Amino acid sequence: MSDTNTADASANATPQPVAITLNDMKNMVMVLDICTQRGAFRANELTSIGQLFDRLNTFVTDAEAQMAPAADAAPAADPSSPVDAAPAEDTAAPAA
Image (cartoon, rainbow, N blue to C red; front, side):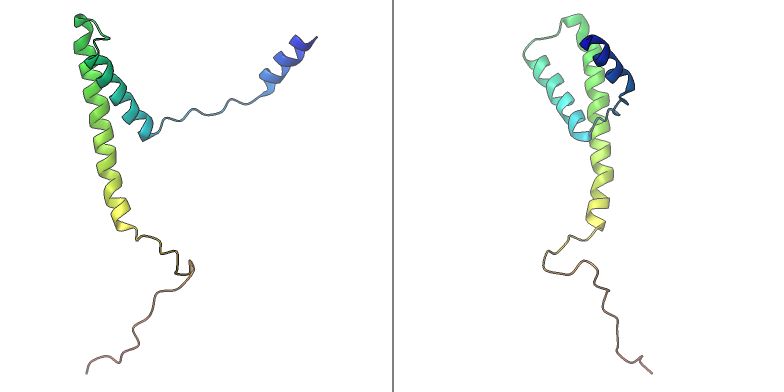
């Protein structure tokens, strides 16, 4: 009877979305590199492994390059400053 309850529970559960992060991609590049260095692949597999490595590495490098300007443009949060403070206005009189 517990088998029926388990089957019903898994049928009603909504599947969680699978997400692969940029860090996961970096790890894949490292794994491919380490496995190649340790001789985990046969010679006839190295071409396709190298092509996969190149595509992943290019993707990671490009994604990091695109994220860098966004991180540089956003000012670093100062923990001592209030979050909702308005920028100071220039109160000087206009030059005549």
